[in-house]
View: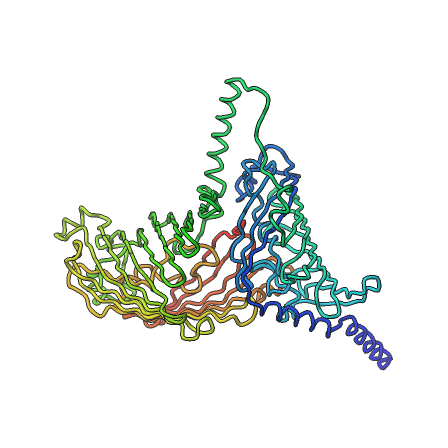
Length: 639
């Protein structure tokens, strides 16, 4: 009986092996490798028509980015759009809207996540930008199960694929492939954010990295809302050939309006505009040939809230814009506004960047920094033990910081960039009257020339080394302090495998000289981030539990940050739970200062379609500092 069972198992095992044509899979992977090695700059036009049916909706639909225009009124929308897609070195650089028409109010973009689904890359590591691991990339093979069979009618092979375990980064479907490994057609289903989709793609023979056409069906369910949409997409089009397909929708109404009707319409439009400005993302293009554009996050949106056990609740708003003067001259502008409810502080910065050709850039930034301590705090720290320091009793030494920076940088060669400029600070006591009563000035100014060298000896295949130098000069523009500061930073992101990244960072900074009296310790690379953003901000190079005052009370610092990120690491492999996890991270951060030697912080983080969260614990000078949590909303971050 045992022999019979083993024989049967062997037969079944051989049958399972014959279900997969490993040679064919290798040809598909080889084909993808050869296509991805081509380095070409190109642009192409994409046309699509769409239909959106709102099956169920409530007031929550208004709060979702890009959904406000269709959150009330009719339930069926249709339209068509023409985009220009710009690619460079196999990567998608820009997707520009050229023309559009339809019955969506004000011709606005809706369900903007669809722009990602319009750009599939079947042979890449991920199918859509950083979403969904492709089953046709060699290093992703261990995540999928395959089955191949011959189609006698078409003469092609059908390759079916499905995930080895449930995870939001994996897809299931099938493809028709020829004997050389070229994909002719592929169909698969998956999930992005709260949207399930099914897509069918016909590949282009002359331009195999990009499709010939695709059909996308989506369904979004969220808190009682249900929106179904369908998109038909054509690629590699001549824009002159589709002028008859797309035209702007006229708004002429032949029926006469009374004065009351016109007034009511104006009032209705006013409230719609007000609601759109507060809840919907704002943006647009200006200038001939869309030379400029701007994008602004919603003013009122709970999705821009963040939280940490130390920083409390924070809120942020961002504005970005650009203007192209010529093919070699671009002006980039931005603004970032944040508020910390726990610290009751408003933060903002307004950066501008002028790029001239590929070598020269001019950058300026104006904003408010973190509250900072006067250097006299150091005298008190020298006579107190670490455990006895009471930061809350030092409010008289707390200052507001307004700054302006200007820097010009020049790319000497592909490995070396040189930057020079200056920084100007005005620091004002938080309690100016009480501080003046102590016989000290409530305002202090500093002017300092700056120098920066950025060296990439191995280009993008090794660490990037940065040297920053700043020298405060007394007497220039009311400056009343002298100092000298140097910082060295080395950072390296190593792509271990596709979507798996090991990030390493080391830094050293010191004030080599300083004037007596009014003086502030304020590092550039070792700073407290009062208004953190989402998963893709500085989580990988920041201390989450360190008291913010240590950043401005250390004569020197030595820090290191190590982070490993993977889509399928620990929790994502757990049945049922894993299908909700997108990415995971492990953190290990260390810090040495004249009072902390060392400070150690470790953590684990994960992100999914709803939020990102990190759990951390800290130890300093052999004392357990405790644990903390950091969380930010990630829902609809790409909408």
